[in-house]
Image (cartoon, rainbow, N blue to C red; front, side, top):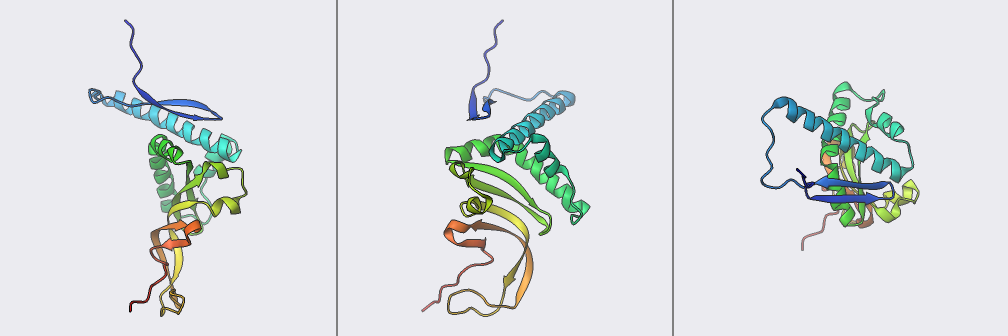
Length: 195
């Protein structure tokens, strides 16, 4: 008996083509915990391979080096932050096939980053066409969704609309879009005078 493959969407790049199945409404998971665990494990191995392959291709770095970067604990990182970073990275890898497909529709690529010195992590979208540029030029075109430690002025509002010192340290989620002049938004923002 011939079995047709499930419908799929395709992720294609210079590194190859990968088909990711869409499951129909009639699909149901088996009740056997072993089968569910095995299926989940196979999916996560494939998703990690896809993430590392895509990132390796874009950054011209070996998959082994990228895996080492993602799984090595730096001296300044607490064990709790390290485990949180690895867990959130794996959560990102879990949804990566969908996130990268949507990002690709908008001419972007997606990355997971960790900031050990600032005690945080983030997700970055960059234009696909900017991948050959230097880090500083790519950074200017990024959209970043971060959560890490940073300082914010909390003093009076000056003529230019920004707060003056003193400052406090925060560890909050924020958005950075350098091309729009947004940095650590909404915590650092310009205030408009009310008439």
